[in-house]
Image (cartoon, rainbow, N blue to C red; front, side, top):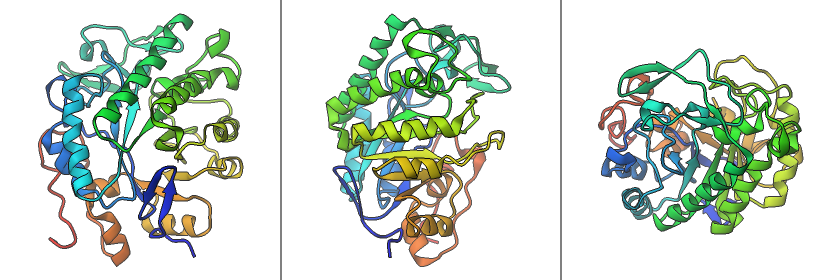
Length: 357
């Protein structure tokens, strides 16, 4: 019977287990969005994951949404990330970089006054963003012109090239959680006309162009994609999330990706719908599930063939040796949400391992 410790082939990557680490924004990058030695220590501690997926990383300059998130668009950032990839590989691990454009979640105070961009001029509501001047409401984005979109595709391609130079084993395209590519996908945020709006085929066009460009750099067997069809985070909604998930699952077979990483639910419980069943029915590649899985539920889902692997977020954040703890049936450390985005090692690299507990 397949279990969480059955090896898995993720495209070109041989994973020793099916316990992946989900990408988690931690806001520990240094000046200029340069990854640090502390980040290298953090990821190396978690190298026993079947695959580490590093946090959302700015594909191009001027698109900061978190103040201290890392980038992959400068030589200094590439060198900074090399510390992490070297440390992870020395610890026997495998690591992909999640590349990302913040879209309307960006803020002028984080980007030298630049107005954020989006498929349509619709702002995120009911939330605020951390800036050097404290928490601020999101601002109205500028609607991108069709003739601006090739430069965004090119930016993702360059980010993929830089990720390769930094020593990563592959990349994950961030198509989830209300950032630019997800904004184009869902009709609550994309109300434009033309070739990138309207039908689900048109709304997915930019995502597919990005995936194709990134795959040209890496080979599609070293590219993953994350989607979140029902997550309402960042004021996201779609009139037919199950239909969107079904469409994407079918079309993505054409790309022969390393994996499809699907978030199964909504952080806020506002939108409902089973997206995992149709994705599994229509997608023929490796399916990675995420969002609120306990080790027991993950094991049952893998054993039943509902998914091929599970990506753990806060459980891996708080348990650097999560696979060993799951295998031993050990109690898990509880994460400290107050330290998720705070600077320094506290609540970052100081969670104890089973051996040290």
